[in-house]
Amino acid sequence: MSDEISKDKNILKSFARYVSLNVIAMLGLSLYILADTFFISFGMGATGLAALNIALPVYSLMYGLGLMFGMGGATLFAKYKAKGEAASANAVFTHVFFITLAIGVLLSAIGFVFCGEISALLGANDETFEYTSIYIKTVVSFAPFFIINNALMPFLRNDGAPRLSMAGMLAGSLSNILLDYIFIFPLKLGMLGAAIATCFAPAIGIFIMSFHFIKKKNSFKIIKCKLDFKKIFAIVKIGVPNFITEISGGIVIFAFNLVILTISGNVGVAAYGVVANIALVIISLLIGISQGAQPLMTENFALGKKRELGALFKSSVITTFAFSVAIYLVLFFGAKGISDIFNYERNLNLTALAVEGMRLYSIGYFLAGLNIIIGAYFAAVFKAAQAFTITFLRGLGFILPLIFLLGKTGGMTGVWLAFPAAEALTFIVTLIFVLVYRKNSYKIENSPN
Image (cartoon, rainbow, N blue to C red; front, side):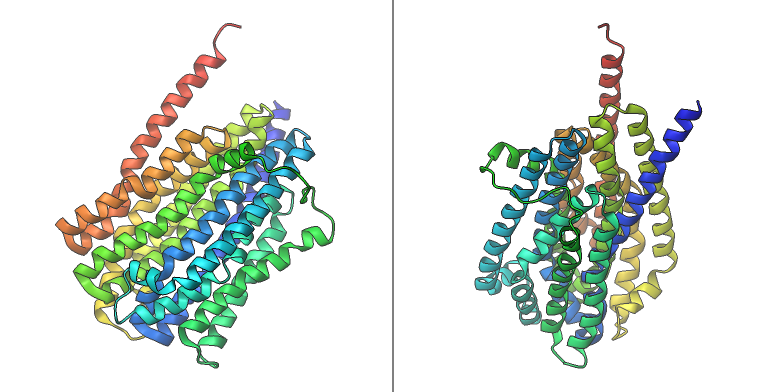
């Protein structure tokens, strides 16, 4: 009995360490855009906020690609590392590094040449086009840094360096906040300055995390190996839920913008920009809990430690739900104060829309956290189909039609309720998956040998 208590304490200690550091790192990562939102609201008002929100899907694409290859690769890396298969672990990292580099260079070229067309496609109008195209052209020029930075983080966490991973994210985020102020105000670079400040953040993050290699504390490295499409498929298969989570965020922002423009115009888009950027931070924190727990769950699953796996899952669910409750209370009672932070012009229409949006939209965080952590559990135990389905349904499958349906029938109130409605429908499917999985696991455990 004492041995079991000791094991529980050790696993909970590891859980607290990995999750807390990962949440802080994800907070730093998401603050890139939140810092832009704050300073752009002061420097360029509602038009700048609307332009930033229109450009966000491009950021979501880069962010999602990095997480897909990073989380997928790091999960495989953790599996091989636990089994002592160093060559396979190094091959996974090698594939991830060169693939993310190539994708980053390709995106830079496409985005730089076609930034005007991309801006128009995302919904920029005469009022917001210039700001949007400037932001997109600048940010995509640094695509390799954004993607590699996001891919490198999970590898460091799974290689026993979660603090260094966190330090890289925080250093990048703090530099972004400082440079936002310098470039937008003293140097008067406007939207270009905000974009440049954002681009410095991943470069600084990579520099900080490179000390893991400089000090030779890494157990993974780039090796000479043949291109292995099976490994690439395995990486993508595991990591695609993370990509769907992020890219769906960009697609959803695009859909919200289209609907809101027809209901409330650019002021409505600016109000949604406030709600969406706060949501970006909150969802990143919820994903941070799942990403901190996932490698631990994978390791214990690979080693057949079912008790420890169950303890990790239970701790993840409790932590996620408690966090969601706290966030809801803060946003419900502090909606006006938070809105005023991003409303330097004191536009009363923007304030009213943003306050209603925060209070209604935040209802969805309760079930969003549970959907995310259960999806991460399925990914950790290599149930990729269930993980993908949960992520797809909450990210795109339910919310896209609900945005248009509820927006048409309920105006802005309907728009704000699309997110909680989608999470509720997804949770029903998630519960079915959990019940089926437990039933199948029970049959396997109790079947005669």
